[in-house]
Image 1 (tube, rainbow, N blue to C red):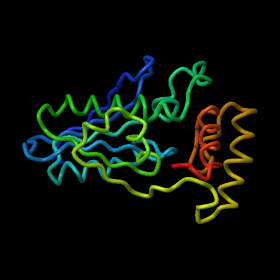
Image 2: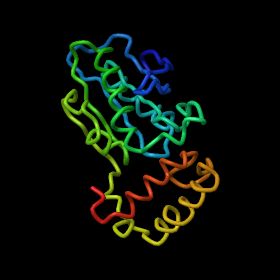
Image 3: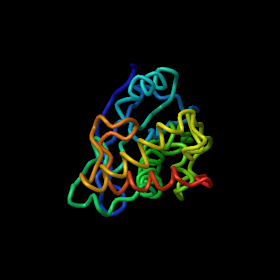
Image 4: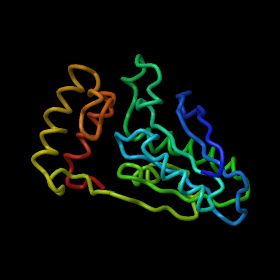
Length: 199
């Protein structure tokens, strides 16, 4: 990659520390937009490193990746996990990341890419208006009956996920699509997936 990579900590609402990685071009093209990558629910920001580097090489002046509160590098204080809600990821964390990136590139436009849950985040945020464009990948309705494997999704979220959230307070790192998720967020996600009007 022709640029620099810097790990940093952003502050989200409620003083929550968000782990983030800023990729910056050595000689940014003034007419290209910066890119915010908002991850899928269980994906760590490092999953998007190669893609972020490719965007820099393609001319983006900056790319920002980040972990949502309670997840991966943004686990924070586990004593505060009972106060976490899934909508905080969009309302607070997406907002903090978008505002930070906008300040980093001053006059440049910013665009976004949302993977799965990352597509839903702008709808929960006041920062959506900062973006010139927003693309999505692997975004789903979410209602379990509308998935390719409804029985599997129902068992994972409505049975296993809810049980782990209640009795352990989180789901293990190996749990499919939600590894390490705090229990309150797992419960929110299971509640949303159970609704035919998910969107």
